[in-house]
Image (spheres, rainbow, N blue to C red):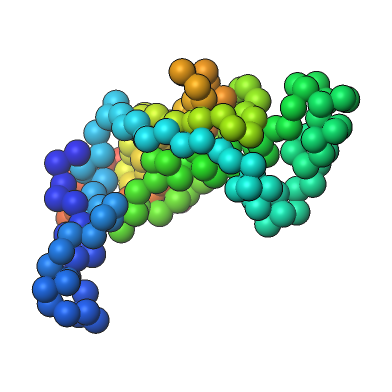
Length: 181
């Protein structure tokens, strides 16, 4: 991606000018035209702790025995230990490669699959791949990216595809197909 990082969000009038000139971390100004099909990024790794797993469960009221009951998980559960809730693996995995692109808006997710279990203490990382893009609306095109969340040394635990609407740089691209209803 060739766009300059942070330009759209680095000049707020509500802070001192010398502060406003500093680029904002993780705030991109990529447009539809800047997304390259096939481009990949990999996140840093992150170990899922007991505390954050339980905080997530409490926040979303997920008290299933597989994620909240150590005795059940060890004595009756299929895996012999507690799982991390799939919704948390999804959230944390996407968060690892999330950007704050000021021109993109989430349109939805497809093909969400929990491939293998993730346990408390597992270390995960994510690879995002831009799969395709297509014009959609007068001011926004669609970008489809895959998110593959891995644990340990490369064991795939989650797959999904994220669709985003992304603003065009200069209006609808020339030669784009007619607008969809």
